[in-house]
Image 1: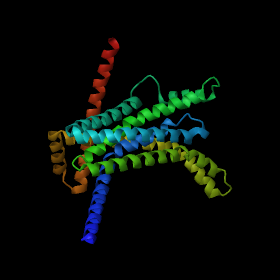
Image 2: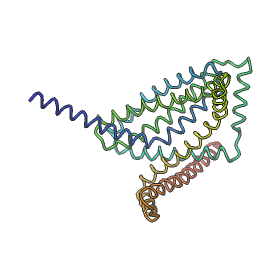
Image 3: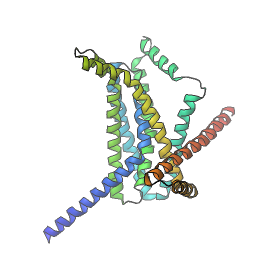
Image 4: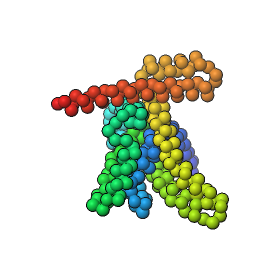
Amino acid sequence: MAGSSFFALFDDIATILDDVSVMTKVAAKKTAGVLGDDLALNAQQVTGVPVNRELPVVWAVAKGSFINKLILVPSALLISAFVPWLVTPLLMLGGAFLCFEGVEKLAHKFLPHDQSEEGSHAARAQALQDESVDMVAFERSKIKGAVRTDFILSAEIIVISLGAVAGADFTRQVAVLSIIAIAMTIGVYGLVAGIVKLDDLGLHLSQKRARAVAWLGRGIVGAAPYLMKTLSVVGTAAMFMVGGAILTHGIAPVHAAVEHAAAAVGGGAVVQALTSTVLNALFGVVAGAVVLGVVAVAKRIFKKH
């Protein structure tokens, strides 16, 4: 009896772990849009920091990110346990914010605004050269801003993950959210540390005597800026795809229309899935534009008062 009870318990644990693994994969896929943007945004946050302080700044922001998630994960679990009806509205708000953020990035890039990206870089470079600037305060300011941005992005990740496991029991929810929180933080800031040091690695390799190694180093130095731009573009596109999918799934008529349109296209499961993704992304762009318009009007009204 004792042996059979032990194996039954072992089987239950294996089942739970298998369920957690599957749900974690689903949650990770749904948070891909935020992850791409989180990666690009945090890598950009380190620009303007002296080379010897890049990794300490990344580590400081990573610690802040862990603290953010220590606040967000229990809060999300409490919401799921005591006010589960709030999960869907929070998920919809998260999706709308993703789309809004994506449209805002496009508007900032293609529409006139107060300060250009080149101007921001120039201001940071000037701060580095100006001896009157307190670099400790400058660094702390950048860390504080990055941690604040991380809190918003982490909240989106946790809410989206919670939506993916909303139907699971409390134990599985705890396991999935904890794994996502830890894995995303380590993954994002590990990659950020690697990205910000790519140019240093390239410069080091370019000074080697071996031609092939030197050529590789020069290639890395040349490719680093394009990698940042690619991450930003992919992250923005993923924000529309993920945010749009969250919104369409939460609005039954829109979701039905998307599914019907995808089925009408035909061409197999892959083509239909691609069609659904494109339609969700387009809906995300429209939704983000609407939210951006509302925010712009609200800002003007508050400025007048």
